[in-house]
Amino acid sequence: MTSSRLAWPLIFAAYFLVQMVIRLATGPAMELDEAEAFWFGRDLALGYNAQPPLYIWLQWGVFQFTGETLFGIALLKALLLWLSATLLFFMLAREVPQSEAAVAVVALGLLPQVVWESQRALANSVLTFALAICFVALLRRASVKAGSGWFAALGLSIGLGTVSKFNFVLVPAGFLLWPLLSGGRGRLPWRGLALALGIAAVIVVPVLAWIVFNPVLAGGSVHKLGLGSGGVIGARVKGLTSLVVAIVSFLAPAILVLGGLWLARDRRIAERPELVRFLAGGVATGLAVLVVGLVLSGTTEVKDRWLMPILWPLVPAAVLWLWPVLSQRQRRGLGIGAGLCWVVAMLALPYASLRDPGYRVGDFAGLEAAMAAVDPAPENVVSGMHWVLGNLALRNPDMPIVWAGKGGGPGLILAPPGDGVRIADRLGLVAGPAVIHEVVRGARVTVVEITPVAEP
Image 1 (cartoon, rainbow, N blue to C red):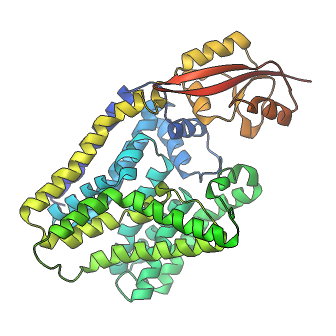
Image 2 (cartoon, rainbow, N blue to C red):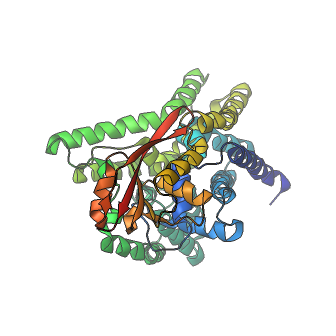
């Protein structure tokens, strides 16, 4: 591997290192997903909640080296983002010039869910994004090398991707079906495909078994899908409309920029390169699978962040498609403009941290004082609010905190207003007079009801 080929991965590493330093410097508290990862990442288990467990497993692994610290939280995300950019660069640089590959990677900055939300708040989706890129890169190699080692690695990526976030399945569904439908490169021999799927099954089946035996914990986010609301026909129309809106929302800046370059071209675009057909075809087939799933299930709600694993290839595909007809000035403009998106996002992160939504400056000292006024030494502190749980555990490792999803006992319940009595009833406890406390976080507040509870 030449030193010039290593230059871009080193640039990516420098960027995410600076981003991590900025994150650690802005606020002692954690974001929503960070707090959840911290809370669950202190122990290994086959499952935790509605999210598949892989991110938590990795967070636990990082904590073995860094301790249960904010640094460990930030380090894992930075490594995953760097891995995403580096894997994509190496995949593309095998088939196109390095400068073209680099711009195609940097152009992911035209996707807000990648350049902004992934750096600011997301956790599981960042891991799924990295594994989606890993799967596509491995599939590209396996279709050429056709060795059992590549098929095993491909199966490993499918299995790990599935237990990172279940929307990952759209990626192998789309990219494995597309070559079969088109007859193009990427079609695997049946033995290789069987080996890959067998390895994936070995990884996924234990997690599925945990879900079967823990339906309440595992089904905690099913309501977000809006299953069946609006009648048989209405639900399907609503679901497909939500999908279209989510696609447009996810791709809007990329459509404006790359669409503008397409309109500004001064000559006709030649036939699409095979790599472009591979990337775009996999996305199209994956979306077709999603449409079928929406129609069959009656899902009415689709969030744009759920589409990140399957939609991201459209940006590098569009860049590679346009590249031959762009002038040198347009190529430089695209690279610099997309790079500035990453820089602006990084520089804007402190605002999100300190003002809106301001999770990283949550006033947990004030919450602790309010708790002490109700019960100076609670036997248990029970809550289902992961942001509160994680941050209290970070600040007070010895505090007897209990996740409401696993039980609880006499002491204090911290919950959204009105939920304290409900949790107490479920636990068979008697609730006393509740105190409402506002945790100030920048320009916003999170309202926490502090309810003392005792044995009946």
